[in-house]
Amino acid sequence: MDNVFDYEDIQLIPAKCIVESRSECDTSVTLGGHTFKLPVVPANMQTIIDESLAVKLAENGYFYIMHRFNPETRIDFIKDMQARGLIASISVGVKDEEYTFIEELAAANVVPDFMTIDIAHGHSNAVIRMIQHIKKHLPTSFVIAGNVGTPEAVRELENAGADATKVGIGPGKVCITKIKTGFGTGGWQLAALRWCAKAATKPIIADGGIRTNGDIAKSVRFGASMVMIGSLFAGHEESPGETIEIDGKTVKEYFGSASEFQKGERKNVEGKKMFVEHKGSIKDTLIEMQQDLQSSISYAGGNKLDAIRNVDYVIVKNSIFNGDKVY
Ligand SMILES: NC(=O)C1=CN([C@@H]2O[C@H](COP(=O)(O)OP(=O)(O)OC[C@H]3O[C@@H](n4cnc5c(N)ncnc54)[C@H](OP(=O)(O)O)[C@@H]3O)[C@@H](O)[C@H]2O)C=CC1
Ligand SMILES: Nc1nc2c(ncn2[C@@H]2O[C@H](COP(=O)(O)O)[C@@H](O)[C@H]2O)c(=O)[nH]1
Image (tube, rainbow, N blue to C red; front, top):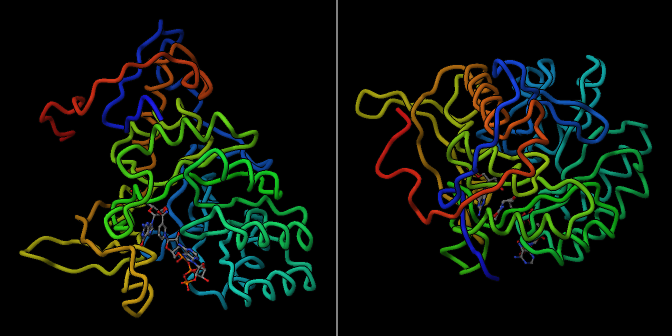
């Protein structure tokens, strides 16, 4: 692999502006036949999304993926969302009981709009078998499969029937996979995204490592149709993580899906817990993301998201912050 870089190493190069105001720039994206306001989805993790936030996001035109950690609630969740006229988007694993779950959904004619296979090492026969099982029983569900970090994996999952693949092994804020196993795309997630996107014939979701709103535009530039984000969405009023006071400051918990806090035991732990400052309402964060992305589109010289996909860029190793902070 040559040209290895990550988000902080890249600057996109501006092109001549064609809009009079950033508000003219359209950040919407279409995935699985549905159009969403932003190419952004909160991570399907227990401290990031719950049922009530899923409803709020869907009602307001944002994509969401419900996590898979309360498996017994999923059928009612799908029915409830669809009864409200909202998209139903859930996650599944690959263990035996998940095969039965898919068959139960098919038998009851409860068909989620989106199904995400959420596994640490998605380049596996276990995931290929699950894609095929979903496609056999629920052929109209849009299947997102992951996580992967190589073009071979993207091709294999697409060939098995995945409608989109999710790229990112280990770049997450609460991830310790890179430290505990020595493997992953941590530190070069953006280059891995580019590598995978070149092989992809279907949409790619970039997952993990987003630290600033500018990283969303960079993900789109390097091939993402959608960007999955955990830490930037953690700590909001609506976030399910526990709220506590530390040294007079209100903070909320954010823990990894492979942490002992999620698993309830110290076995194959590849995630940790942290506390993030309380950030107010998620609505304000989504609005700011939209404004920043509109600005990115204007710098790209267009008025639609696609304008970002073709801009030039430079690699400026580890230098974009120069010690600066956003606020
Ligand atoms: N994006 C990322 O970088 C990562 C994300 N995660 C998140 O953590 C959660 C738990 O993930 P995961 O452990 O896959 O889910 P599960 O605990 O549900 O494991 C799923 C199945 O895959 C097997 N499995 C897991 N990892 C491997 C591996 N490296 N090689 C072979 N088999 C494996 C498990 O068996 P067994 O446990 O016996 O091995 C189990 O049968 C998910 O939400 C996932 O997204 C976790 C790590 C990295
Ligand atoms: N290695 C691990 N990765 C994890 C774990 N739980 C979630 N994740 C991944 O992180 C992203 C979110 O990344 P962020 O940088 O935006 O915070 C999430 O979507 C998962 O792919 C874990 O326990 N270990």
